[in-house]
Length: 120
Image 1 (tube, helix red, strand yellow):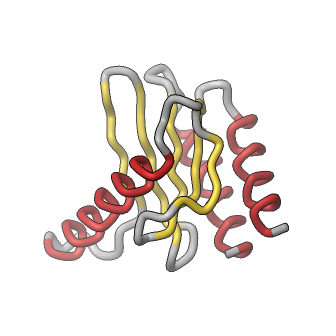
Image 2 (cartoon, helix red, strand yellow):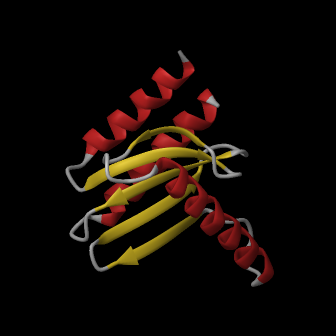
């Protein structure tokens, strides 16, 4: 039941923009909670990589005096990865096309993360 509700939030997020190609909710220790990922991506690997990047972002933000981490963004030649905390123990990860309008993606992802935090 809870996983269906989480997947519903992810589905709504993915449908909010044609530029969002995938999304997932991952525990802060790297376990996949729910995802809408392409079949060619390994959920365990995605979870582990996202947890590692989030931990590094948390530590960097704190050590460099930037305060509490709000989001991590990675820009690659073929697109973006955006990670936002969804409560204390989970992170929302969003994959977007390189042509994405990031302002709208950030807004939709923030709203989804807030909804997910209530479910978790």
